Image 1 (cartoon, one colour):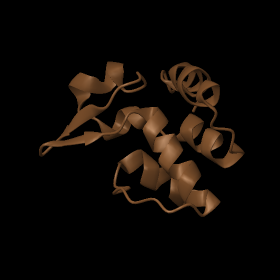
Image 2 (tube, rainbow, N blue to C red):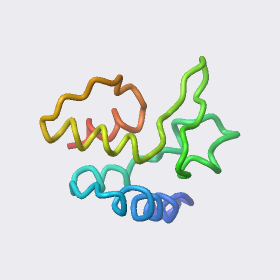
Image 3 (cartoon, one colour):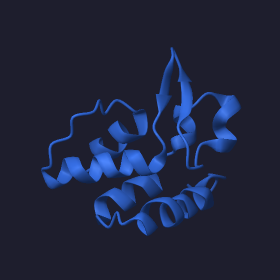
Length: 98
């Protein structure tokens, strides 16, 4: 990942948007720091991939803002009921890498 220009943005996203809002699960924080969110959005949105907002991904769908993905994942791994679709690519990618 040394050639990944988004590494610093991912770490800043986790610190500012996720950790500071109370998500403390190490597995979630680690996944959010590793998953290349920019690869799951169209090229014209890559510069905004780590901002605190949902982004369009085509077909009338959006990728949820990073905090929402982290909160849903934290709830899922804690055994809480999660009643929303967890289809965003980064969420799936983060959950698969155990």
